[in-house]
Amino acid sequence: MAHVPAGLPVVAIVGRPNVGKSTLFNRVVGDARAAIVEDRARTTRDRLYGKAEWNDRRFILIDTGGLEVDPDDPIEAKVQEQARLAISQADVIVLVVDAITGMTASDQEAAELLRSARAPIVVVVNKADNAKRELDANEFFELGWDAYPISAAHGRGVADFLDELVKVLPPESAQELARKARELEVERWEREVAEGRLEPFIVGDDDDDAEKDGDEDGSAVAEADAQAARWDAEMALASTDEPPAIAFVGRPNVGKSSLLNAILGEERTIVSDIPGTTRDSIDTAIPWGRSEIVLIDTAGIRRRGKVASGPAADKYATLRSMRAIERADVAVLVIDAVEGLTAQDAHVAGYIVEEGRGLVVAVNKWDLVAEKTDKTFDQYVTWIRAEVPFLDFAPILSISAKTGQRVDRVLEMAVDIWGERRRRISTGALNRLLQEATERAAPPPVRGRRPKIFYATQAGIAPPTFVFFANDASSVHFSYRRYLENRIREEFGFDGTPIRLVFRDRTAVKLPRKPSRAATVAAGGARAKAGAQRRSAGAGPIPGSPGARAAGGPRKPGPGKSGGTGGSGGSGRTRKGS
Image (cartoon, rainbow, N blue to C red; front, side, top):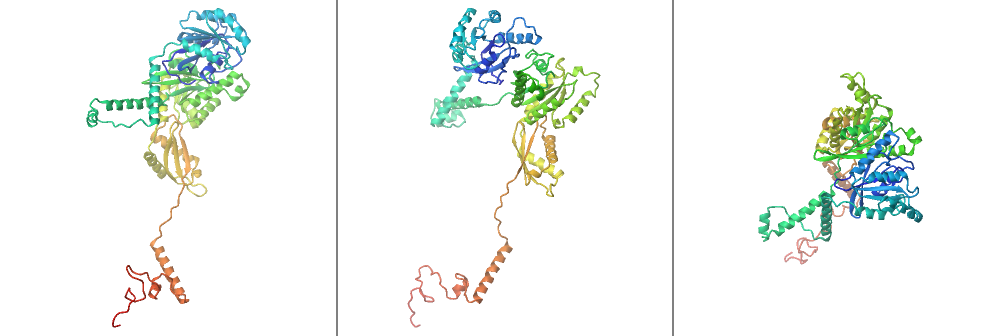
């Protein structure tokens, strides 16, 4: 689920198993794939958080597992703990019941459990997709709360239910009111810009400006401050800086949820020795310095064969884990120290690199490794580098989620890698490195022709992407590309993040060349030779040439003269005494 801001009221959806809580959750948050929905009880286990908005009120919605008084399964017992935590955090509780089955003993037990809650309670009678079932929903009024018949699958009655829900929400917090004030200020600013009524202002000495403009009361300064505030509101609202998202991924039962709980210091997600306990991707925001980071716990990624032959819940869980990698900035690949690196671990690592995400390899269960020496970890690193050489850029860390050994280093490394993914290198520094690299080792020739790399530039971040322009980009060998990548890493770092090198052909534009002096002289000689041949053939000189004018050809009359035939006069009259 997407990260949700703080300062919003919390609404928890509870009820017995298989009444449609996750379907209602998906309907309200507006994402049909937010929570796993299956026609089978006990599909949801952990708490799922989502952001919703209705009638200009925003709130956080929590999906929970089914409420049961005395579960007979150890995992379901932990599901109940998660549901009760959601109830304790909620400002409003939505009790979901089933219109098809009617009132059951489990519904009454869930209602009794909620009577001691401090938050107001709203009853939703789900699966009331026709008029008859809406009438049947009246029996749930005996629980003592207002009941609203809906059909979460089809959307019937959901709008009326949400209208009543926002009425019982607590008053808006100061944070929410400030956010709305910024939105109104930005809207007012955008209208003034569209209407052409927003004039620029110059930041300077306020007192001098007021004196020069004759604005002794400082109204111009006040207007400038108001417009500056609008700019600040625009920038604050338009900011897209999301907190770093770190996903814990790997095979089932390698300790991903245990690692998350060890970092948080609480039982945020359900942990058991049974593989496949986690099904949804669980987001948790924690403070980090002056900001915060989002931790994503994921379900174990199984092999394709097991996913295809297993239940639908396992298939959806794997898909959600892959989506968590796509929206994460850094992935922590958790592997089992006892079992070592497996083919499925390498498959997951390849997908992380393909998506361009940062990577930390966490070797969990280090406390179970027998007969450790000071060289044991180095041997593990050597084995991993040999099995997956494409992960030579990723740091490897041995941890124990059970004992807490080095779990804090996992987050420190992940945040450092997040910063590396956003590093920018100037074009000048990059091309100086390229010149040094090509002087040290030129690109190898391909098909008898050696490619030439002209220049390079960084085209993007997250992941860092560099574009190289060459005369024949396709002939740059793979080994030389790896050489350039290693030189970039040696010089600029980029630890823990894949970098992408793109090679493109430089488009050559041929400009007309200025003729040389020798070519000009040769052209003049050719013209003189042609004139001589023309005269020898009796054709006379070329019209307009100096030879033609000397032979009595027409001349352009001088200024102020009539153009007569006299040799010296311009009037055409003969001289006296001639």
